[in-house]
Image (cartoon, rainbow, N blue to C red; front, side, top):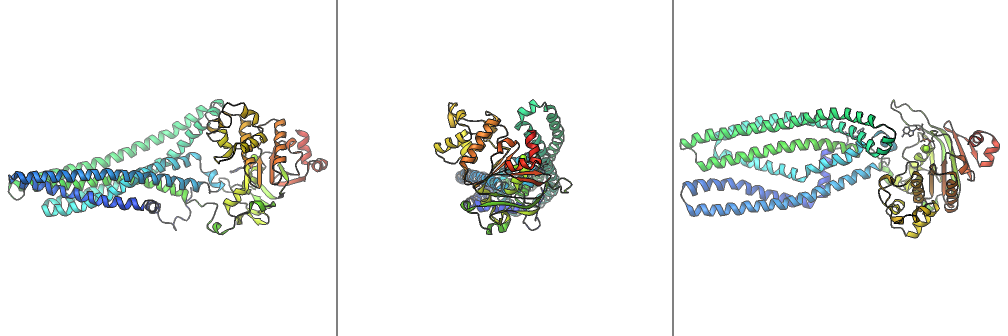
Length: 585
Ligand SMILES: Nc1ncnc2c1ncn2[C@@H]1O[C@H](COP(=O)(O)OP(=O)(O)O)[C@@H](O)[C@H]1O
Ligand SMILES: [Mg+2]
C-alpha cells in the first residue's frame, strides 16, 4: 500500500491518540483522577511501613502500631477497590475504541478505488481489519494510564529515596540508566522484527483464506497439495521470525530482572552496613527498598508496555496505511451536488478510453474510443466476446475506476462531477460475482431493510423464485448458509435479480446476470425485466444473444470499440459481427 501525502500528515500514533481522546473525554478525565488518587496512596504506604517498624515496633509503642496497621489496611483496601472501578472504565473505553475504529476502517474501505481492491489481497485486508485492530485494542487505555501512573510513581519514589539515603540513591539511579540503555536496544530490534512478521503473516493468511473460502472447489479441483505446500513455505519463515521476537522479548525481561537483583543486593549490602554502624534505621531500609521496588517495578512494566506498544505501533501504522489511501471521493466531492434520481433521462458514454495498469504499469487500452447512449425507458444490451471489456464498462459507470480519456455523463453531467454516494445510489449492478450473505432468503433480498412480504414475494416471482420458495418449509425465512452454499448457482442469480428488482435505482445493469440459467428461464426473466422496469435505464450485458433479441438497442463490442449497434433485425441484415455471432450460437 502506498502511503500518500504522508509527509503532510501527522504520525499515525498521534492521530490514533487523538481519535481515542475524542471518543472518550469523560472516561479519560474520571480515570485520570482515580489514577492520581491510587498513586498517592501507593506512595504514602512505604512511609507508613517505616513508622510501623521504627516508631511502633522498635519504639515498642503498641497503640501507635495498631493505629498505623488499621490506617494502612483501610488505605490499601480503598486503593484496590478504586482499581477495580478503574478496570471497568478501561474495559468500556477499550470496546468503544475498537468498535468505532473498526467501523471507521470498514467505512473507508468502501470508498476506495477499484485499483486498490485489485492490488490488495483480501487476506491482507482481513488481517488488518481483524488482527491489527485486535492488537490495537489490546494496548487499550489501561496500558496508557499505567504508563502515566508508573512515571509519576517513579519520579516521586526517586525524590523520596534521595531524602532517605543519598549514596544508595546514586547507585540505584546508575543501575536504572543501564537498564534504560539496554532496553532501547531491544525495543528497536523488536519493532523491526514485528513489522516483518505482520507483513508475512498477512501473506500466509491469504493462502489459508483462499483455501478455506473455496474449500469445496479446492477439493474438486485437486489443488489441495498446491495450497498446503504454499502454506508450509510461508509458515516456515513465519515461525523463525516468531521465535526471534520471542527470544528478544524474553531477553529484554531477563536483563531487566538481573538489574533488579543487582539493585536489591546493593540496598541490603550498603543499607545493612549503615544500620550496623547506627547511621540508618531498619524502617528506613524497608521504606527505601519499597520505593526502589516502586521504581524498578514501574520501569519493568514500562519496558513491557513498550514491547506491546511497539507491536501496536506497527498495527496502527498498517491500519492508517488503509485510512491514508485516498478515497475515490476527493475533498471537493463534498461541494458537489447530488443526482435527482427521478429526473435522470439518459446516460452517455463519450469517446471513453480505459486500460488497467499492469505490473509494469504500462497501459493496454481495453476500451478505445467507446461511445454509446442509454435512454430512460429503453432496454439496451451490450454483447461481445468474453474479456472485451463489458464488465469494465459497468465498473466505470459505478466509478470503481475513472476513465483515462473521454467521459461518462448522466444528463450532460460528467459523473466525476456528481457526489459519489449519490451516483452509486442511482445505479444498481447485478454482477457476475454475486454476494450472498449467511442469512435468510428474505434478508438476502431486502438487504436487511424492512420491506412488506408482499413486495418481496412479488420480486421473487419476477425472478422466478416463487416455486422454490413455496417448496421450502420456512419459506422466505429459510437460511441459505454461508455464501449461499445451500442453494444452486442459478438460485443465487435469481436472488440477486430479485434484489435489483426491489430497489428503485433509475439505472440497472444486469451483467451476465442469467448466465447460470437455461434458455427458457432466461427468456422468462427478460420478460419480467421488460414489464417491470419500464421507466428505467436498463442495460443488459449478455453472452448469449438469444436472450436479448427483443431489446431496443444492441451494442456490439469488438477490439475495444463499438463495432456495430442497432436492434436485432438491423444488425442481422448488416451481416456483420453480430450476424456471425448469432449464426454460431
Ligand atoms: N481489476 C483488473 N485489473 C486488471 N485487469 C483486469 C481487471 N479486471 C478485468 N481485467 C481485464 O480487462 C479485460 C476486460 O475484462 P471484463 O471487462 O471483465 O471483460 P468482459 O467483457 O468479459 O466482462 C480482461 O482482459 C480482463 O483480464
Ligand atoms: Mg464480464
